[in-house]
Length: 419
Image (spheres, rainbow, N blue to C red):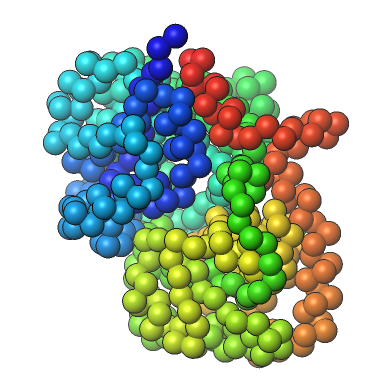
């Protein structure tokens, strides 16, 4: 059987970050498919920005922008990608349509189910292209708000568009996704229950035909990479206080709010560094502004693209909310979850409520400067629930009597090849 081509459709403003985070999967894809074709969605996206808030407007760092600095973008991409890849940048939906007609290809989609991408979904349907989704590296803590006005903004910015997408899948205007690969046991259990129910309303139906549970990317990385494990650092996973989802419902934070937030955070990190006699390392998302973040952490080193490396070398990991925290749970590192002192839509309390993780409100001095003995006791107690977290988000425990050690990437490659 000849090898298939595999397409990955994504807004190229996200591409460098996507490639950096998925090198393991891309290496396996390159070994098992004829070509990897990255397809830029940006110029095909229509309609969303003129009617609804563009949640992507604050999402990207221009350092690796293909439009702002093409040579730098391509140079950095070359270092990360396997040899058998192509970049396809359709100028419009018509050019994308012609490409699909001429190529036998399966597609992994990395697109929001929002109006601006509806033209792309229609072309995939028209050309009978099989789509897949890989969701294997986060807790998937969705944006919420306690404010009625912000709830309405979020609903009209995002939720209603997703529901219309589901309707169009039900009435066969769009193709349903063939398979969603997911490492979240909660979503898998919901999907299994959903399949047994009589679904009267279209929004109760899933937009994918099948959900296949897989072990998460953190598990695969722990098996296939040789990162050094130590207890050298206190690692802070810094949060973007102006994350795109928050900006879409709240607007940008005032500078004085940001300044107060980082003053409290620095004071807490300095306290932790003093009592444990460990250097603090700050790790940030690749799309965050490095220079701006360094200004907020003048006494600490700040790094991009090395988060997993430093978590592996950490003694303690501090965070608000970050998909990278999964590695800390897998490695059974000590973890502190912080309560946001700013208006943030993510629910940072779930780590404490569901898994007993130490949860500190550093606006309170006794928690900002918590005593070492008390903190150590709380950190050790919290580790009792790590196995529950791992079995929920990293190695989904579908059957308690079976220990599934198969790599998630192997399941994905094998399944797509058979479709």
